[in-house]
Length: 79
Length: 246
Image (cartoon, rainbow over all chains, first blue to last red; front, side, top):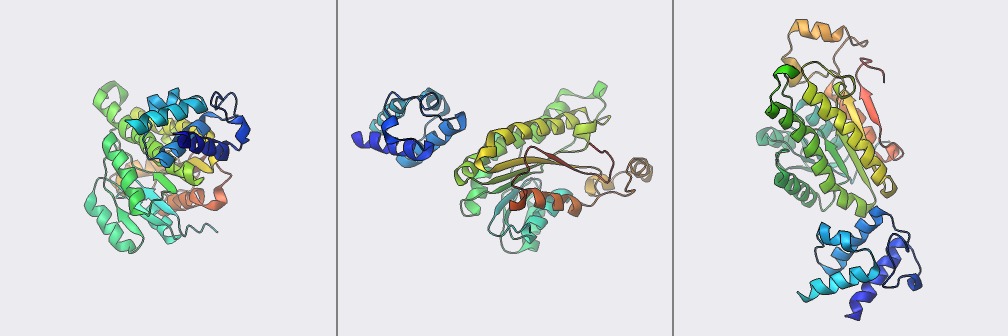
């Protein structure tokens, strides 16, 4: 399962051009990592592609931190 | 200049006079085109005349499910790409406002404005990923000047201009441009039905003293769709023989 966390963090680093050390689970995409609203949409698209899942809009809106993303993806992978 | 080789384009309303000319022009510049509209026979005939690099996906712009299907099938037909979207589909239900029925108002808004938004939204995802997109919305001179008997059509076409400016600002940083092209009076089957008196009255307001041709509209679309127009976004290109200078 930590594999999921690593893959999520890698996508965030690549997409937002931030240092890996900044990408902590509590880091907020917009407030802490400098993402704009379009970046968050693109991150969700990248997660969907990487993990072969669909993240519905209402769920996507709740994903505000790196940890939120990891948690959602883990939850989807289990079900 | 304006080479579109390798680009994938979707043109709605391609069975009409202007839409057909747009599809031909994009194709001539080297693009692969998907022709959409409601009249499948006319679309197939156009496809046959274009030869290679042409596909048909018929769809109704008043049906959300059909619009999503159109975006998916067009992308699939063109090797998973959709670089250029020309929202040309449009209808009229003319009536003076005092007599305009709710259905006439709603139908025109639904097809011309809401349908265009839905299709553009569906196409955006892939354009964002590829960091390239050209959206050209065919509006109308009457969306800027108004026209008696066309409150619904003018509202929808003006709506397209505001919508395009908003999308342009949202998407500019991703290499996607969103522009409008506003034709004046163009010689098509739609204007063929006008009487000579009506045509004379219209031409009295056109400094160029003639109707425009669909090819003159298509040339503007080719420009807005090109790599060369990368720095043009949120604009409305008026092609109207000088009928309105705005």
